[in-house]
Image 1: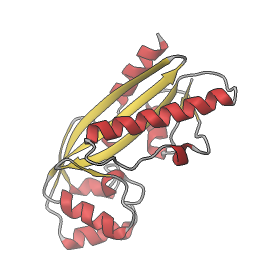
Image 2: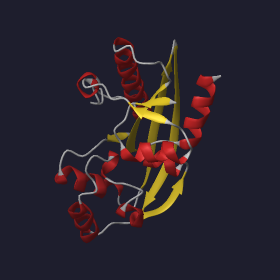
Image 3: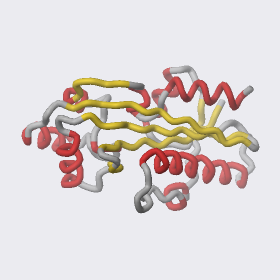
Image 4: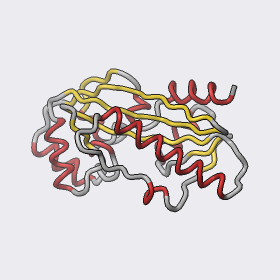
Length: 194
């Protein structure tokens, strides 16, 4: 049994896929306390690792305050990066369109960092994957934006959804691109539970 500090349905499905029993634990103030704004000139790898670590530490601290039973607590963060720019979750349709134009016909990197707290341990792992998009027409972009699928998605798209039709090639972890790299998660949980 672990705690999952994420309200992402994709992460929940992926954990269930590998048979991990979990309880959702999202402290009310996690979103207020964890600043997901990239720092000035912050490297994308540093950024995604910092945010995952902060989510885990804030949630673990709250778990202890509430005197909850202590199980490992898992948190994650995913970001899309191209040309060293961090593409987080688009704020609106306009930003989502800008992201898709940037990704059109290009290869980009998807980073997912996971962090796990248990007792006095904090362990982290990083999944690095590459996704290549076909050249997108304005019609492709408008069709995708109108679907609404871009909302709350790093880089403004979901591999497991309609945007799969844009992808010409993947190198790395499909589950990492979706938001929870299963190999790295299994390795981390096996390490922390020994």
